[in-house]
Every structure is written in C-alpha cells, then in structure tokens.
Image 1 (tube, rainbow, N blue to C red):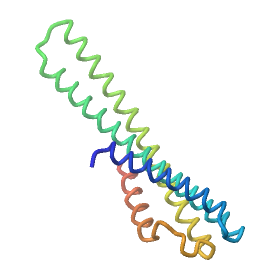
Image 2: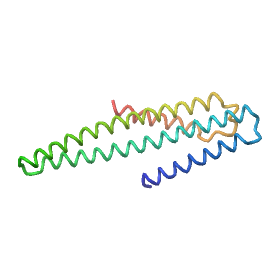
Image 3: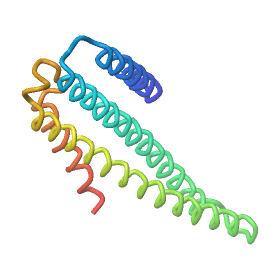
Image 4: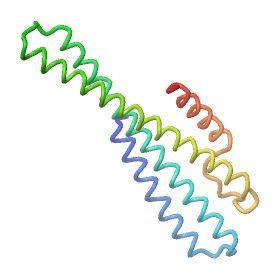
Length: 157
C-alpha cells in the first residue's frame, strides 16, 4: 500500500465518521447517550486526523533524510573546484537543516498522536456504560497503539 492509498483510506474513514456523527445526532437514542456517542466519534475523528498527520510528517522526514544523504554523498564525491565545492557544501548544509526541522515536526506529530490515543482510551473508559456497544476501537488495540507510539517517541530522545 502506498502512503497516498493510506491517506485516501483515512480520509474516507473520516468522512464516514462525520456521517455517523450526524446520524447519531438525529437518531432515536436517549439524549445523554446521543451526546456521548457524538463526542466519542468526534474524539475518534481527531485521533485519526492526527494519525494521518503523523504519517505525513514521517514521510516528509524520511524524504528529507534521503535528500540529506544524497547531498552529503554528492559533496564528498564531487571533484573539487571552487564553484562546485561552494554549491555542494551549501546544499549539504541546507539539507541538514531541512532534515532537522522535519524531525522536530515528526516528533511533535508523534507526541500529539499519542496524546489523542490516550484521550480516546480515557474517553472510552470514562463513558463505558453510555458507549455500550458503540466502541469502535478495542481497548487492547488502543493499549498496543499507545505503547508503540510511546516507543517511537522515545527514539527521538
């Protein structure tokens, strides 16, 4: 699966969640249950949007590391002359700066995604009785996702 296919699937899921939220708000459920389920779907929607952002930032970081590697290789292997050396050195420095910026953005997106996963898990736990039968993400899946995301985030330190 390509990243674009992944993003398209996520976008489709987000649209479906929006439709589900509207259906629940107009449904025959009791008012308190309706509000909780609607809030749950909004929280899930936010979590999926953050997951997509993390993937996008991760892809950008990966691309910037590739560009930095290529620029460094070109600088090291290009035969020396005054003009090419100045150009290749600047290209290498710029690519390192871009990679550093992309890393920080990916780190921030990873943290934010982890925060949303934790918020979703807490929401499910706090509202378990009102969400009876409407939980879309199993607690075990959330626990594994939070652990994996925390592991990824610790890699930045």
